[in-house]
Length: 539
Image 1 (cartoon, helix red, strand yellow):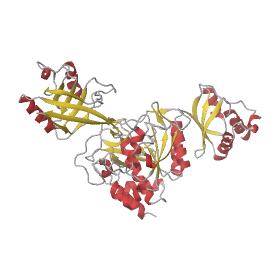
Image 2 (image 1 turned 180 degrees about the vertical axis):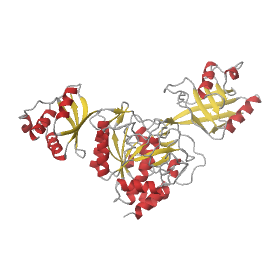
Image 3 (image 1 turned 135 degrees about the horizontal axis):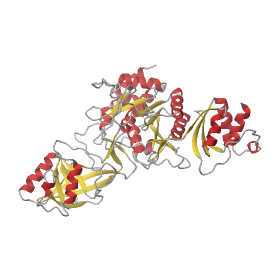
Image 4 (image 1 turned 90 degrees about the horizontal axis):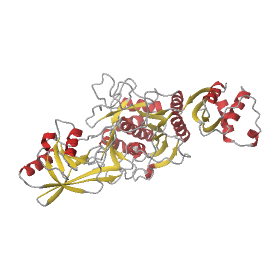
């Protein structure tokens, strides 16, 4: 055994070609791992250079040594070299690097106006913060002070005004940098981080635990999230002794390396929270479905399950996951602005815009022309060239209405709702952008414009999309950080709790929702106030 292990260590330190393949190598026990780890740590020393191996060398190189997982991340030249690793008696398991889909929100929207704004904490407090009763838990948990949460995701904008004060450190595990570039090029990780521990500002924006500290592990890129990166990220969380790991990522399956990492995190006492998935099926995705993980589903602001939230026996709890406003990399968020002018007077109105519409970063003003419900017959005999079409919601899809407007020569459209409030919609399903600006306004405003136009008076609309640092996303990815934030409050209240105890407290204190015949809601919506009180009472 010792001879074969020494051979493995030496051969793993041979330089590899540019075509190397990343693999996870789980050692059989801590003793064999420590020997390999020692060799890795002293790579290039004279003793190793003497090369006393007698077995066939493996053309591979150790990239990382995951000390808390008894695991090595290795760059192997080809399948033949991987087979040699698999056959080594010091090795328990070898798996190739595989990728889960990159985490993306189900829908991503502009920030929407706040109606009936709460008095506490402020006008721009996201609705989910209030729904999980975070402010009611702050006094007894000191707003999460002392708790540390690792966000394994797409990275973070560490300079974001809502994140900077709570940001502790970050690291890249994707292999796309030397580990120092953990910047968020997608926006997903920054959004999740803001929900967990965004700083409470003067406008009321806040995370669930606004005094908790944030660590960010970039384990996902545009190519997806690899098992090797996830394992390395979890290992880092154990090494850093964080309280909570938040994972708004996953897929239909997990690998042995990922399962081993999660199990070791649980053994170390960490609380791991993960998203249930977004395909709406009765099957919880991984790693959320693993027994030690807190699997989180999504509800909307009526406390009903969203259409996309996956559910099933493993679902532990639910949290807000629709139209969740949070931080995104600075300047990448968008807010809508619509001003209506008639009779020489101009006034702003509540609005939102549509995914797939042309952005209007510089304000544009045009005359509005009534286009009914946007049917092709509604455009007949009217001049829409270079103007905005005013369209009522209803009967036909938004995309059809806008295609008809484009055919008529309109350069933009203002759609008014057929019910109170505003909704969010998409004009394309493939990420493409149409050549027209499209905004939505409220029902009563739209009706008054129609009356004015019918009376023969001119009405103009000024449209603009304003760059901002915040955006509203939908997804179980957005629900997960609410629960991770509550877990941080619980740990701040009682540092002695382990992951299993935190899970038990969150599920036992959740507010039940239903009907729940298929466990669509788990134990119910997470309740920070009750959870923190239970944590303080726990031994």
